[in-house]
Length: 566
Image (cartoon, rainbow, N blue to C red; front, side, top):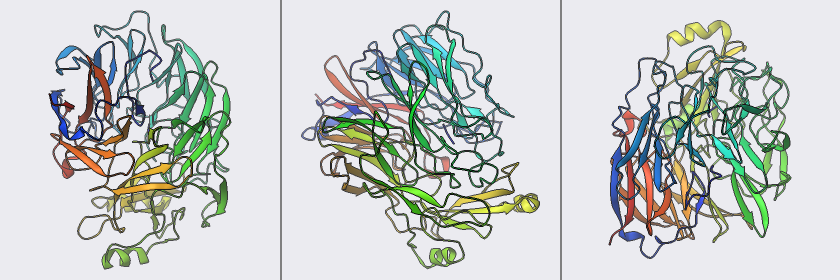
């Protein structure tokens, strides 16, 4: 369970959104060259508190003629857009001993003359946009306070995504550690006065008895209509819901809230009573098709639901279909399936080799929504997801939604409470075990890899997929060189830019066909989302290149800008 800008800002593009810039286009993209590189200078090694190593995943924001970037360690920098030189930097103090499950900062938000930063240790800070000094009069208590149920340890409740801004409100979700306990912290979404930090409203995704259901991905806003669109994650714990009967609404959903009051206007649940960790990890994507305002919701299942933005009603029929049953709890007998578009990833397993087929034969394997089991269940898509936190890009010229997806089977096994301590003592490399305290079962999970270390399913393991929003069909699907984490950016120049894969390149694809037309070398792979802006008449494309994991290639803390050569 993880976890824009109301100011008039020239040509800002956020994760998954559309840029109207067209100076760089399909005819000249081959002339893109590196313009500058900035490095934060911070180490990405794991910290003493344990948990995951920090990940440099920020998407820069352009405003006031400056480029703003944040790091997981609480550093905020304002850069000169045409050189990458530092105009100012501010080091926020964070708790470096927290056991952070997802140690990242995906960027900042801008409101008038302020920069808002949500730090990994759950602080909300306002800085002067021109100087970096703390903004006078803005005070928000520790975001861990005021919850129905708060965290037990430092790092159980985090902030990894930037807040959303609409009108005079700053809106925060949260990232909550997976599977530590059944009664995990609650996932309230809260709105704060942008001037003072006063709490204005709170929206509760569940009844308060169930934990999680938190909004760790990016919250989207429709300023013209006064709407806030919240993607929610799984109720806790992920893999056994015996203590949280029912559909667990509004977990695994997109909800539309009235911005001024936080009142729920409508909600759409993508997975009922989730026992697969199938969060709505993708930010809701706002788009317009044939004059109708809509919102696209991507799920880890691989499904994309296309909804009317005002009512939440599906634009194409959604069917409730029977899914495999479990004897361990009262799981939902049906799940929602969109009739269009089809799933963007395979939902039935095909083994890549004989060893993988032999392993699969020992597991419960009944396709998508196979429930977790004591014997072990093959889950496809796995917990990383078909659609992940990188989200979708929108091209109004082509009426296309474009998303990077993964095809990564996982193995989930439920461990009876009485056996968990013994099992954990035999923990194997590559297998994650958590107690799900308060539930009848602990769990183990691992990515399903063959003897060669590659995912066990038939490739491609990652793809870039385009959905036609008029017909609801898949227009094209382009294989990627590897699995991917990071988002796409579509531009009016007929291009989709994507880092995300394990190789150290930023790539450009032709929006109409999905054909790769350019790649620019990076110092490390880019587990992030690019953005584009125009400064003094020149268009730049910028991406954070931090690497994915030490075992998968070099790490770095670089921000790299590209522009057309002269």
